[in-house]
Length: 307
Image 1 (cartoon, rainbow, N blue to C red):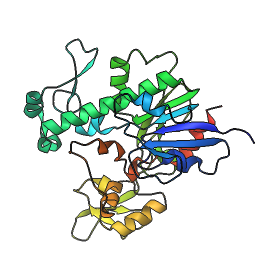
Image 2 (image 1 turned 135 degrees about the vertical axis):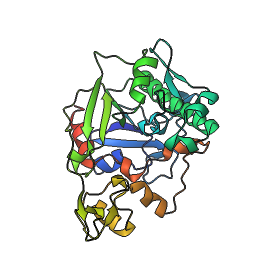
Image 3 (image 1 turned 60 degrees about the horizontal axis):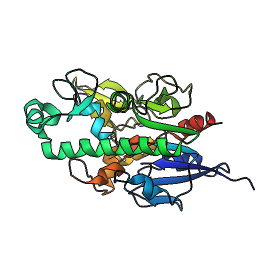
């Protein structure tokens, strides 16, 4: 019997995308590392933001492939602030490195969505995100797997951090920013995502039609109406990404027919899962919601590039 290829999936326990995408394969042995409750025998509870992580990981089988969906909350473009940057991140004066804001500057700049965020908590989250990506990079550097990828949204500030702050790791001539759209792999949401890797891939990308259409009722009001189930609708003056919140049971049904990815975090909350956002705890690294799951078809295509 041929020995299976060892895969380390870092930060993958929230949705277990790699395990589910390759489940049943006689080629790969998937080891998932996170602080979530394990769902398969090779899922290990490890705080990937901890110090001296390399020593703690030596007891596991040496990886030939490493995948990482590191904490994106710290680098999210959703939390962009006035003056540039994402919450506590900003460019230094020479614009050649990302640095932390001070708490006073944060309080001065926050507005709109960021106005209700606590400075102490957001600084903690920023530092947590830094630990997560730095540990990911150190593991890749130490184990030198044949193939690896780091996944985050296309517009995440994470990519700027890697290119500017981790020049000891990043190599433009041998690393590739592989772009993929989840909408091209069965999800009715475009969600442009980068997979930074040492393997060059030709993944499907580009915008797709939205999962809803706009309808005007007899009173002149406009509504978003879900294509898969026209009984699901939401007023047009609300965020179209929240389509599906109108009826959570139908939202789940819509998800099963590959539609309506918006609002999936609400599904998690409806299942009474604890939301750790805006709290000072390393539990944040396991917060991947259903909308963060990588499509199975995309997982299989990525791994087809790992010859």
